[in-house]
Image 1 (cartoon, rainbow, N blue to C red):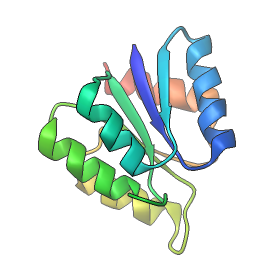
Image 2: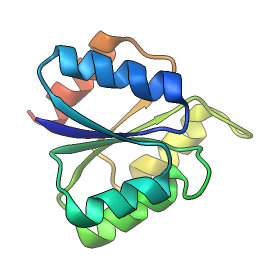
Image 3: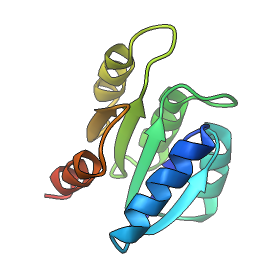
Image 4: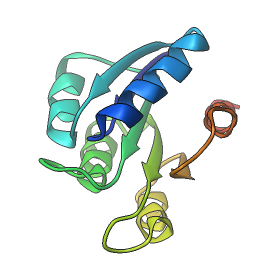
Length: 120
């Protein structure tokens, strides 16, 4: 499966990439929403995993743009919070039509289970 990870924190981005590659996925990364949307203009993936709080374009903007151009795209939103708690951000993401949400920190198994749920 092809997966795009969008997160401004390099350690999280790299950790998720390693976890998913260990499961034999082809993984691409973007450090913010703007980079992700530019990359998605010319590329397709089976799944987008996006953080919510990011510079340039946040995860909400990414979700809205993807839903407008590719309504069938599978998306998992992740968040560790920010000025408001993570669950509030994730509730907004669910209202915008993401397929699943995860609150940071989460385990590899929690991520794998969410991916399985999304594609079940």
